[in-house]
Length: 513
Image (tube, rainbow, N blue to C red; front, side, top):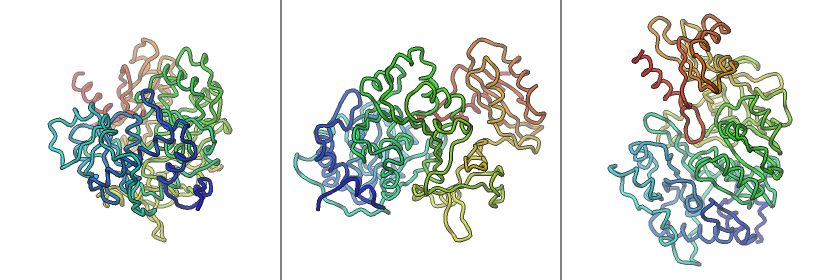
């Protein structure tokens, strides 16, 4: 039977590896993967994935078993990922910013027997007593793989079998392993023209790590539809713009801090970016002003995606279409639902502020080896159906757009009053000298918690004056007890603000005061 990728992608479930094999036959000479150092055609990618997958099976990889991957984003990293899935296993990409102890815990939690690792990251594991593993250096993967022409066994994987385990970017303790099924990834990848994919000449550029679900949101559909994927091992503004202009990139996924740095680059307008069709953004708060500037200065559509690695609701904001809704994260995508609940877990009427709860076709299967944590992150309807607690406080407006108020865990309770850091941060950002702002709650003997602010500055200014000006415009219960100027906000590799680090900084500041 002739394999038709378009018909296949319209099915409720299909084989992702079969798509990779098809594009290898259909467009063998078109670029599939390029990391700036190594570039492979679709024909080469398809053949190499088969050979790596076969060697994994020969080495004893069992159906559904994890294959750990630790390294900098590269062509060979992507090959290991695809081969793990082709072999019937699942990919377990590890967070490169994790501590050696956390990496060891993730490897053990995943149950992996193989670890694909590059030389730089292997050094990070020195001194750790790892479980029994077969180490494969990514630099040597072509010498390790099976002989040319041999094919791996088809393990007959179903929609319920695991595709990957994504480890959360927790800054303390062991990150939780978020299991995505093959069915979930199929629904995620097979989004088609409605999601902005399916163009025969699509060229996507990523500049965030391959271990992040943010990155996979663009990677998986690009490859499913036979596009070309350009990868940056490390984000650099000038290099990003050079690649985008030279390769005539059509799609990209960036986090808000990357958009900010691009907009601030003094040569941004010198580059020809007219080839862009869609720019995506996710993972962190994206200010309305920055969205408006990107829409104004950068050709192509701008779509903000709101969701989480665990799943839950998926909201899309077509920023270029809704200039009056830039303060929101958009409306639920087809198949997604969202509402709010109160502190007792009761469903609230539309328009009421509460904790967001949602569901979609792209929900996780659960946390690896942690059923209690899975239940804790869930909300169950009267019919027993599971919804994902999004961890955010927000409201759904009269048009169905979702407006975020703040993270549930970041809400400050001071003197019995609920304080949302986002409100205080917005006032700080009104000061002309403030570039970035963040507010956290710190312990207080008098109030239980008290809000403390951090800013990065555009110019030298007296922070006491900024604090006084800000507090004059805040309600009495909202006022900041302290304000600190720092050189740079602490962020993860995908641009998430690390408020845990800010709390450590605040504690040190208090001790030295």
